[in-house]
Structure formats: C-alpha cells, structure tokens
Image (cartoon, rainbow, N blue to C red; front, side, top):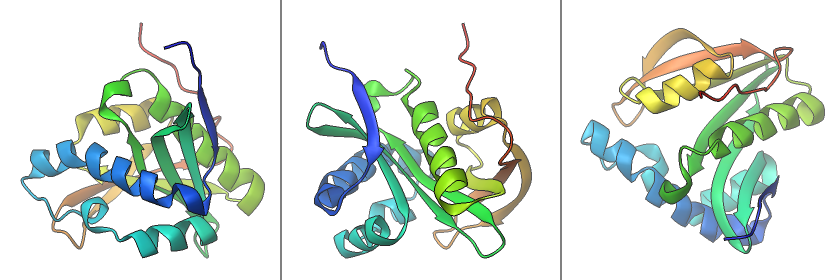
Length: 168
C-alpha cells in the first residue's frame, strides 16, 4: 500500500464519504443485534453535515479515502460524549479505532475543556467493549437506545491518558 493513515478534522465535503463508511461499518453491529434500524444506519446526509459543522468530527484518511471516523460533543456537565466510532472492515484490528478514539479525547479536552469522557456500545459488542476497556473506560450503567438495543455506558476521567496498549 505504501501510504500512512492520517487522522484529521472532517470537513463538510467529507460528509457523504463518512456516511457511506458508517453504513458499511455498522452492518456487522446490525447483524449482531438482528436490527437494521440502528441509529448509525438511519442517519441522513443533512444531519451528518450538521454534526460536522457543530461537533468535533475526525476522520482517518488513507490517501483520498476516508477509512475511519469518530464524533465528539460536549455536554452541559463538562462531559465529552464520543460516538459513532467506525473503521472500514478491511482495516479493523490494526489500532486505527484506538487512534481515532485518542483523537476525539484529545480534541474534546483541548478544544472543549471536557473533564470526563463518556461513550456507549451495544451489550453484545465484545470487540468494542475490549477496545474501550483497554483505553481506560469503565462501565457506569446501561440504557436502551431509541432503536431498542441495550447499550453499555462507559466513562473515564479526562486526565487518564488516551494511550492504548495493544495486545501482543
């Protein structure tokens, strides 16, 4: 391949590519839950453009192709919400998700003064749970999403480094 994956802020011109990647990447989650109406699969292009304009959205680029994405927003209580982390299926398992998670954490802490980070994932999503635990997140509760999927809520203090220790 010969190219490095570069993580940068998303632009409005990235919206369509991010939405297509999100749709592709969340197919395995939809299959896992037998629910193809999960929120990442029903998002509109207009709402994606709004997210890029108002939130922190990072993308991973391999040349001109977007191969990963993540969003961050700051809630009123100083908590940085991280969501819709996705990596192209052909590049999963190579640490790209951890790099994107770190970018969201760094951006939320530096640009939005987040004091804690919060995210969620489906209760059957073992790979996601493993990634988040390795990144220092601990479960703090659960809730059922609007799409009917039981979500595990995880948090960590913003002072915990975004470092990720890969398994050997």
